[in-house]
Length: 143
View 1: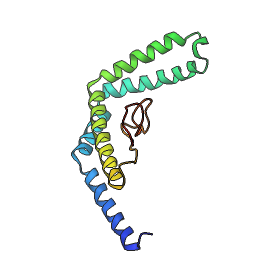
View 2 (view 1 turned 30 degrees about the horizontal axis):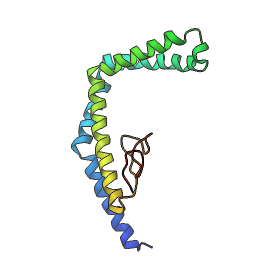
View 3 (view 1 turned 45 degrees about the horizontal axis):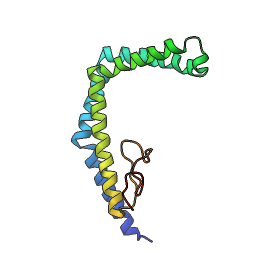
View 4 (view 1 turned 135 degrees about the vertical axis):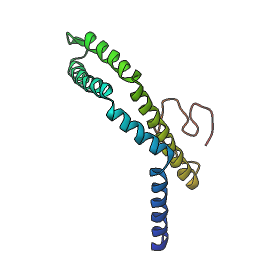
C-alpha cells in the first residue's frame, strides 16, 4: 500500500504534468484553431446547416432504406460533410485536434509502459482495433 507521502508526491507530479500539457505548443495551437473556427462566420453558418441536415438524416435512419427520402438525405449529408471538412478553418482545427490527441496518446503510452510493457494503450481514440496488434494478435508479435 502506498504511503500518504507517496500519494501526495504522485498528485503533485500529476499537477505538474497537467500544467505542462495545458501550456504545451499543441494545446495552444488547438485553442487558437478552435477560436478561429468559432470566429469564422462562413464555417459557423455551414456547421449550423449541417447540424440540421444531420437531424434530418437521423430521422430518416430510423426507417433506413425504406424511408422515401433515404437516398436523397444520405447523399446530401455526405456532400455537406465533405463541404464542411474542406473549409480551411475546419481542416486546420481538425489537424490541431489530431496533433493534441497524439500528444495525449504519447503521454498515456509513456506512463503505461513505465508501469509495464504489457499494458495496452489506446491510440487515436481506440483501444482495440479489428485485426490489429493486441500483443499476440494478427500482426504476428508475441507477448
